[in-house]
Image (cartoon, rainbow, N blue to C red; front, side, top):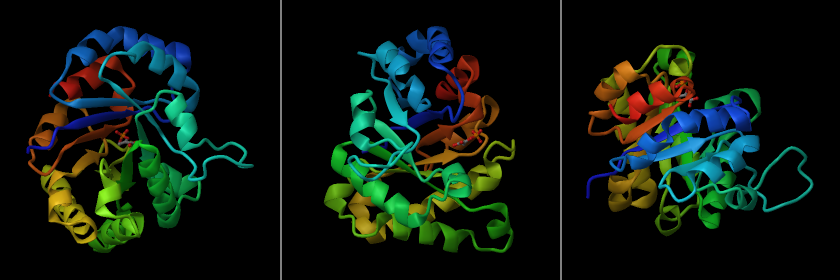
Length: 250
Ligand code: PEP
């Protein structure tokens, strides 16, 4: 079975509910009519309700950008899987490099969050990727292996069902530098190999691996036409309806 492409918009800390509605007014009919790829919008928590109300009854998914692994508790400022589901989420981004870099996210917390997301029925999009110093030191493979092994720790193939991985080389995020299709394809093969070790060949063959890092309308086609690249996690270019639509249609 060919893997269906997934294009996810990561709005980061941009867009109030009014801005989210304005974005969707500009592109919802075209996005909703697009059936070739799965499309997911990940707004900030405070805009989830607005996006959810507008995409209702379309096949557009909604993702949280983070979540806590506990069901509830005294965790000021945090949000649970149940809360994401109640707000209309179908997906959740876990372990984004900005969470790792600025908010103390570790491979171990990604593992805890991944288990909770899978148990609660959310489709997790787990981000992995090396920073520039690691790439230049020839450590890319070690870093990707470590991030995968620790994220997948003690999760069975039966439980891992909808798992999606996003390969996001940190040096390409928001910088305008994109990994060449070959760099991305090599990293994706390595990640698929780790998934095969953890969950078996059959699981790995159907698991989707997205590329993220300065995906733009002018490079989307070359990236998406790589057999190993099953879609994109798009930051900056997803904030504008025209550029996001151009990527979806690439
Ligand atoms: C991201 O934040 O996941 C991302 C890929 O950002 P950008 O597309 O802006 O590089």
